[in-house]
Length: 270
Image (cartoon, rainbow, N blue to C red):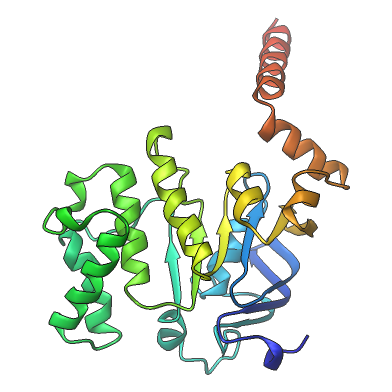
């Protein structure tokens, strides 16, 4: 598949490398995301998932390889980064809202500055998306007045207000308490049903199995295994994938491992 075969909302990554000094975090990643597809990236912490996501919209500069995203060659030194990012919405772990702006202002500032929308139009668009995430009544509040789940829903509304062709989610529920995780996942399920192209870094295996068209397991900067969620989550082939999922899906296994490690530490201390 060539770059010209990728639909405007799609992603094609070939041979992607990223290093911080001598620490190579991404070691030749290949990934294709078709228009309307939901791809979930899973794997242990430090495997390179978030770095991969941040490279897609050039929050991190790759050291090698190519990235074609939303109709742009992101690794072309002459790429219009602002124009590219206007097509790519990103939702972070820690919300990244402007604390000095109201909910409504958080959802309009980029529209006005980047898309050059008149304020009245920007507010109309923002209110539509705030209503869609259930926060229409909170538009005049500031982030500090909101719960974590509410702040994350504002972040999603803010991203959607830019009319992106692609949405990137970097562990959007990891900073939330269990009672609010469901609200955010429900919004993401709705986006998937509506055909939004999405790349999601997540530890929510039930969500990945239900919503994803394609699951990618990463470890140590490599793609270890990828395919349909029923295959990768339900019946993984690779031992490393099997071990990761056994730990994630079986809390008893994790607790036993922790207890064993604790007992060994006590023994070593003696």
